[in-house]
Length: 191
Image (cartoon, rainbow, N blue to C red):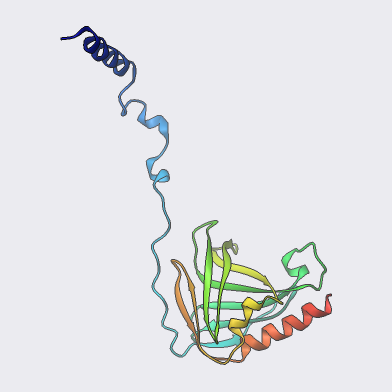
């Protein structure tokens, strides 16, 4: 055997002898379960046949709120017009925004794009997982003047999708358009 090859083999053997096996000190590396956690399993889309919009209770700073769902069941979606005071905003107290809440579990601190298709419009709006004191839900707040909200203002069916949270078919109703219109007028008075 040539001396150069022999030296290379010995050098490799010495280097590997200095390294502990991969299994040594395994417990000091932390929990493998935490390292492999991924997003939750996607949920099925709800059957929104017969679902409808209804007025909902108001809290401080919330000018108007409607929810969408089946009678006697937890709602699928909520839309609220809020003033700056309700959001803890540093802006004018009467600046208005539209908050959309998808009442389905979200992974803590997750972010996604909510797709809305209908009424001749398409919009992709950012949503974040928000903790409401009990569970994490999908939520986003948008300027009342945003033209992306026009998808909610027409007389036809709308499909709302959040990855992993399923799709919700929003049956036609004038209530979302009326809420957004009133919120836009409120925002205009803040200027």
